Amino acid sequence: MGIEMKLQFKMQQQLVMTPQLQLAIKMLQLSRMELVDEVRKELDANPVLGDEHTDPQARADADRSMPTAAPNEPPPEERIGVTERLEPQTDMAGRELEKQVKEVDWEQFLENRQMASPSSATRSGFDELPPIEQSLTKPNTLRDHLMWQLQMSDFVDNERQFALLVIGNLDERGYLDLECGTDAEGNKRPDLTIEDLANEVGLDPEDAEIVLSMIQRFDPIGVGARDLRECLLVQAEVLGMDEMEKGIIKEHLHNVERRNFPAIAKALKIELEEVYDAVQEIQKLEAVPARNFVEVDERSLAITPDVYVFKDGDKWVVSDNDKGMQRLYINEQLAQQMLKDPKAKGFISEKLKSAQWLIRAIEQRRRTILRVTDCIVEKQREFFEKGVQYLKPMILRDVAAAVGMHESTISRVTSNKYVHTPRGIFELKYFFNSSISRVSEEDIASESVKQAIRKLITAEDKENPLSDQAIVKLLEDQDGIKIARRTVAKYREMLGILSSSKRKKMF
Image 1 (cartoon, one colour):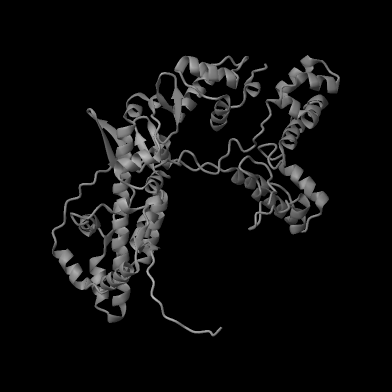
Image 2: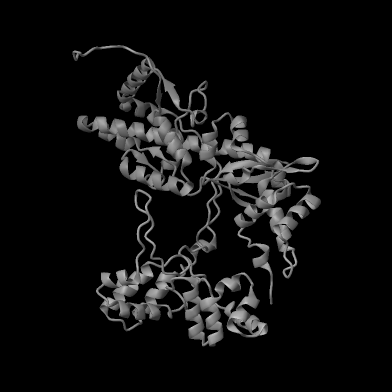
């Protein structure tokens, strides 16, 4: 069979996403902090893009710089999440349009914009001063606290280097974490050992154990322990607990967790009352050394909402929060100067086009979030009026159908976006819940069921806590909620509530 070359024509469909659509999707799924960072990067990379800090006249020019859609053009956000289907002829037309955009006479465009009368800014915002919590001094982290104690110690150089490795490998609880995770193929890497850390700094392994023991006696006592048993045992030794209590920590922590005190008494050949007394003392020890230290200052970690929802008379009003967001505009004066240089004209044309796309994408993101929030408020009105027990079941498809967008768009809009309401600050995803059946009543949202479970457990007798099956019966009798026992267990674990055997108050 001979080898030959042929030309043949065929028609096929392609999935194509224009750069504008890709940018709009990227902007839409960013959180508020990520958006601010992205805008800063663009401001650094694009010389014709400016904000309010660049020029005092930026606020007046920003509205004039905002591109507007044609009257009959559908809102761009309605196209987000739907991949454009283009045939080869349409693709060629798109390339031709892209070529025409590159050949825009930007000098004439900027002159026409300067002659246009600026429109008044109508976007509302909340200009109150920042809360006083954001002006507080930053507290020390656990690492800072340990580093201060390390500086006060008399370790030699290699011992100090080993101590730095230990402090650097502490997890959020204050335990020494020597796990190495998995490799790119998903295979578990071998965990590190104290000997590995010692060899890295040229320290004898026996000396390394002594240095680790000294670090574990830093404040808070037990920090740097490798497991709960070692953490409690260090505290017991420092506090001078007797051998019986140390023996329980060494050999019978599993029985303490299960409240199996007779087994402890039998194994240690002591009275049950002595076990009770010893366990009461052990419970006073700290199982999480880093409890009073946080890596992030919660006083200054404030969620900035993307939108506000407030009641004005009988109406619920949705307003965007533009506080802290740069108002972008095109630096026309600089662009005109640089367009006079033939060598820079192509570069500036590209940057002008990129600036326009970015400004349009950010405005589109703002409008889309407002539309989706407004729809959520309309569907969850009873929640805003009466509370979480009136939260209705709702899925992405419900909102997507109401606002005429794709479900993937709604998912992007509601991820990492927050709304400030009279009932608190919520992520937009909070309002999407599966439905739970009720006897002779309409379905209830799963979040409302979680709160009902929490309420029952809060009011239970601590010496005789409710089992999951008892909660099932109470939910059906009191609220008409039909739910399986395993679902109660799942919701209880999601709420961070222990099982009835571990909630039982023994002393």
